[in-house]
Amino acid sequence: MLLRGIHHLKIALLINAIFFGFCFAQSSPVKNDPAGILLNPIKVAPHTYFVQGRAELGSSENQNFISNAGFVVTPKGVVVIDALGSPTLAQKLIKEISKVTKQKIIAVVVTHYHADHVYGLQEFKKIGAKIYAQGEGRSYISSETAKQRLIASRVDFAPWVNDQTKLIAADTWIDKQLKLNIGGVEFLISRVGPAHAPEDLLVYIPSEGVLFAGDLVFRGRIPFVGNADSKGWLKALDQFEKFNPKVVIPGHGPQSINPIEDIRFTRDYLRYLRESMEPSALNLDPFDEAYAKTDWSEYDGMPLFRAANRMNAYNVYLSIQAE
Image (cartoon, rainbow, N blue to C red; front, side, top):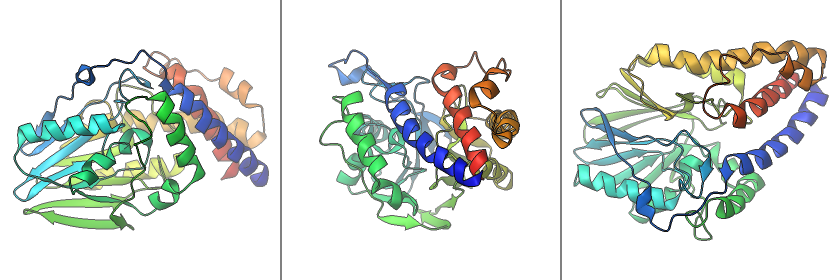
């Protein structure tokens, strides 16, 4: 059963890459005016801000602005967390940061190498920022999957992602943990993957009480599970309590000022996927039957349910067979 599960999982991941290439990148009329998408930094702590992506599918119309990014202003420079989903968006973020502070952007921390978080990296590289990411990201950016996804994105998100858009490697690859002290402000960067992605990182700023969770936490929409390790993801969520943050910035959705309560949504959704799919996965019952008999009423009214939920359930079904 393990070998069979792994075989089907590999096939599913290929299908998943194709599916989400089209599903999360639907064509829309392109606006010639890039000012149509506004980034409005939200202040969540004395020196910490973030911009909130839209609860939509990525498209040319929204320039792939579907994820969050943040920044922390220190006396010695600005640290950015994630680079958004197109170079144009990154340029806009850089401009918004310049309105908040005259400090230079000196570092970018990548929570994971999904397209909506990293296609803006080259703009930060151009201005001399040092890029930090978890070491597993090296495997991804050199993979055929990453190359094909970028090729598709140059069509799906044109003209904002185009032939000039590149995958950018980190300057520093983090193994498990890294403590950065910039201008007297401490950044605790911890690997928590494999979870949502193999290279997942958390970024905690103790003096601000803010934790950047990447895509370990979704708010206000159905999570994207994709080829995630759902069991590892649940374990990663348990680590949040040791930080005891005042504010959590999710990878998607509004900030949380009640972290324990708000993290529960992502945790409960993942648990429900596993509990619903596990009996059929282990018994080798058909997935379609398992999905059809599951009560999705708690989630079917949420944004992106139709786009993501069935594939989420299918990937969990196959991953359980491969465990």
